[in-house]
Length: 385
Image 1 (cartoon, rainbow, N blue to C red):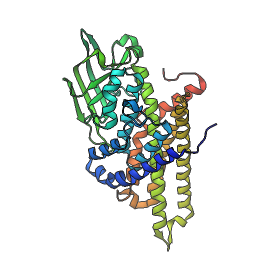
Image 2 (cartoon, one colour):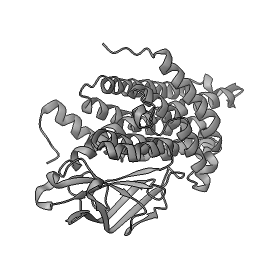
Image 3 (cartoon, one colour):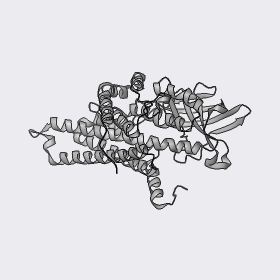
Image 4 (tube, one colour):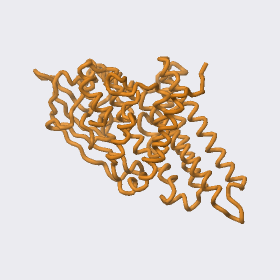
């Protein structure tokens, strides 16, 4: 039976994260967004809080928290700014969790303390210009050499790619093998032949770093291989399972932020000599937002509960990610409606919430991919082939 009552420790973690978001993230979110600034000082503060390695074992420099506690942190960071939440999600769910699950002891001790402390940032190099949902069909190639590998290819839409010191790069070692030929490599970004460039013109996440990576015969040793040849697809899928939970948690934060902003505005804004919060249709909009927020949070907590108990959770994580990301868009859109014209400019956070929410239905598996995962689970038939 699922117990939705938080422990004293979890409640403290939640309250601490909320205070951190209110004190350190929200006051700088608008100006960072306007300036398209990747806030390295804020990243350092999140690292000091232990948020860049919350679920990593303490022996490797993490906090060793359970997934539900991690979700509580990510929700509050996401309520503050999705760009900051992106740093936590990528660093923790995609990079650190992959190294801790699939790495050798040498790899773990070399990289995890640096990543958890914020000394080094990591990026997740899976998506390519022509490969998104079809993760098994990568164009990036890894060729065996006498003393290691050379990797060549391009990656696109890579969060933190311009600031990362470590790139987790997925490459095909033998195209004839399909997904059984995929491999994952830990590639230092200062390697010869490795370059990155910033992607401009994004709808949202203005203060998040998004890059295109280029690898031109980047040489790495055998020790750079994460897992075995052929494990690349499993590494990617396990990372995305964790990443989807993190994105879903952040979307709950967007939902809650929209509710908070809209309730405050509706109680202050007066029309016809009364607060608009007293209008039935405004209350109906607020109620819709609250229902979406509670439903999304419940689904996220269920997925976290299953993860913490080592139970199968791919279905529940996809359900949470699908619902929470779509709910974030709905609540942000409704929040702008509650604010009226004031919601269309960045004096209030709701227009940023809407812009930032939109991408959550795309990365870590689109909403359509989540539906196919759910459909496969309930029918036993794979519609993705």
